[in-house]
Amino acid sequence: MDWLNAIVQGTLLGGLYALFAAGLSLIFGVMRLVNIAHGDLIVLAAYLGLTVTTATGLHPLLALLIVVPTMGVIGYVLQRQLLNQTLGDDLLPPLLVTFGLSVILQNALLEFYTADPQKMDAGALETASFAVGGLTLGVLPVLTFGVAVLVIWGLQWTFYHTAIGRAFRAVSDNQDIAQLMGLNRRHVFGLAMALALGVTAIAGILLGIRTSFDPSIGGGRLIFGFEAVIIGGLGNLWGTLAGGVILGVAQTVGAKIDPGWQILAGHLAFLFILAVRPNGLFPRIDA
Amino acid sequence: MSLQDYTVSRSSNAARIAAVVAALVLIALIAAPWWAGRAEMRLMGELFLYLALASLWNLMAGYAGLVSVGQQAYVGFGGYMLFALTMFAGLHPIAAIAAAGLLGALASIPVAVLIFRLRGAYFAIGTWVIAEVFRLGFAQVSALGGGSGSSLPVAVVKSLASKRAMREALSYWLALGAAVVVVTAVYLFLRSRKGLALTAIRDNELAAGSLGIDIWRTKFTVYVVTSALTAMIGALIFLQKLRISPDAAFSVNDWTAFVIFIVVIGGIGTIEGPIIGTLVFFALRETLADLGTTYLIVLGVVAIVMMLKAPKGIWGVIRSRYDLQLFPLGYRVIAPKPDNGA
Image (cartoon, rainbow over all chains, first blue to last red; front, side, top):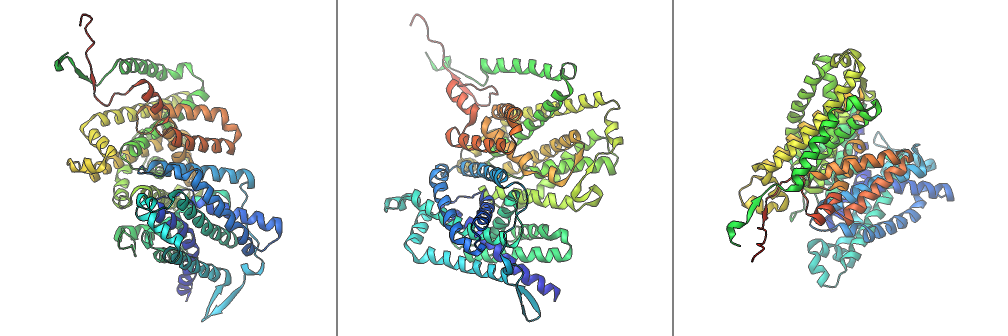
């Protein structure tokens, strides 16, 4: 029963990792950009949530109404003003610019919020739980998992059933031809980053309710998101959810064996899958 | 002016002058224990080790196209090997440094086989995962102090040299030697046949492959050699620090972020770049370090602006303006001087 519990809790934790990963997967899919600052943006969203809740007294989940659009605007401006300049055949500029951005964000957060660990107060939601077939599930982890499924379904739907989704797929397939068809790729990229950071905002708030956070944890969140993307297979959003779940289960099972092994077990599971299925478990056929 | 009048040369006057100046500077630096204070020697020792790390990262990223954000894996690995081999195997510290290099090469082989499956930017994050695995792994070894780390025993430190002044001079010379060996090795490697293959891969991977260059093997060689040398530098770094802990040994900021800034600011894909970048980085650090986090923000902004406005770095700007090459790698055609009578 203990093991089953570890697996179920790990699955729910996987929902949070899938949310970390979804934004990463989205921008890679649309503009082949790997954002090293992604983890720090998650932490930024958590701090924005903290500021909103302490300033207005809103519940953290209601703070999403403010933080998600804010992060979206930040994403659009960031893409149009900075990241669009780095896109091209050369791999180095986007990598090094987002790496520099990561250092700037981390230290700016340190300057404003100090290094003290912070946490968002979500009241009864934090400890609420219910029993299912002998297992006790926390309401927050279940909610997180539900949100992850909903977000990924929403992204999938946006991609395949809306005009903006068509634009995303068009610039992803061929930027130049998409441009000839009247799409402004700079604007489309901006919208993709806005959407990605909107998802990041949700991830950041849920992270901030679940655990304490400080400015230095961004790198770790980036790695979890990245591992979920690779385990699931590049360019497959549902695969990313599966990747997050596998990572989450590996971590909770590892922690069950020895508490010091939690994170390490996740990394080892990732390396194992990289060794046996280098394209991930569910690669997109055309990738 | 017939074709025979043209000559092909690798060297130039600038390179010859640079070589003479470099030799003089090197002699002055070797003599530093007689003219510099303790604090200066420590600072210069650190500078040389950063120069070595930057030159190695530059070889990987600037020439082999392997952009790693996980070289701290080998810095920390080398440091821990120094501690483990001197404490448990009773090796002399200098023998332990050499052994750390060898073990670093061995460790990097399976790592390379695994993470070479990732392309481009995903390769970069993959190297970071490896560094995290190393960090968490060493934190589990209780004999080496676990998560809180350990100090180098006094007996081991004394085995290097009995007097403190002598120890400090020795560790300074080791750092200087490491920098000279690494820069020279990178230079000679790039002038060799393999180096030519590497440059071809950098310029156009597809074309290089179609000319019969084994791309995977060339990159693999660069990765393993770089890792081995990085592990040796790591051992030297922690021989200077005398204390090691997982967080310090595998710090992404100290051993990768700063190194990347050095290379980007100085000029990626050139041998001169890391040298200039190291000098600029230390000048900035010594003047702005009191600002704390603001200093790191400034550093990040400088790196981003550099990447966008002058992607070839300071040396790239100088080279394109004055056609200089202090470490001559390429051949150039020299036109004959026009005859006065003609």
